[in-house]
Image (cartoon, rainbow, N blue to C red; front, side, top):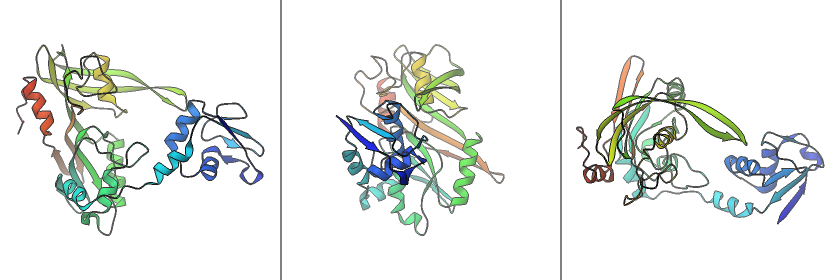
Length: 305
């Protein structure tokens, strides 16, 4: 099924993504990009980028895609219950005048999106902790990854922390339980990771310092300190050396999830940074399912509590 639209003169020289939303509603940018990239939308029978400037009488063809359902889904906002708010407040490690630090649970997104409604920003927007202000997300942490996460309480702190992350002045330590015995006990992973943006292949350098804490012929517990911050960097790097993280449904080997629960065994264990000569260090206790798998796989972690 093909739907065709003709651009009228009132939209001449308008960015395609803006024209698209004006025509069909509040559709997420990521979805527009993906649909263009896969050729499900074409202008004058050609693939274009979201920044393409449409002209009067341009023909926009949409192939086999029901945007109405997506728009309806996107407009359903997540309203957290008091129980959900309280449960997440109990995960807070530090609460000061400028930011909070919490031990994020796996399975919850940082911000809302097309694939997940339940998210930390909406939850803490309703919390009394952010009364008179709003929560600012200053870094990323995948939905399925647990551990240390920071949210700023004001714009100034948000800009400062975001800058520290961008300049690589925030030092992060992750723990992962992965399939198989990693041969080297420590070292660096230097890789060129591939991603796609609007159909364009982009190669990014990724660097991680690692140390194997414990291992056996079946599994390894590894500590990782990413120097760069590429999307899914640690998961991709472990997959590339044949040691997928247990529970990883995206980057997996045939044996990496066999007999394992669905939790991703990747945990943001520690964050360190400095603001105005004051040092901040935060650690997040391991989730119960992580500790259970350590025991099952007979792996030892000295700081386990």
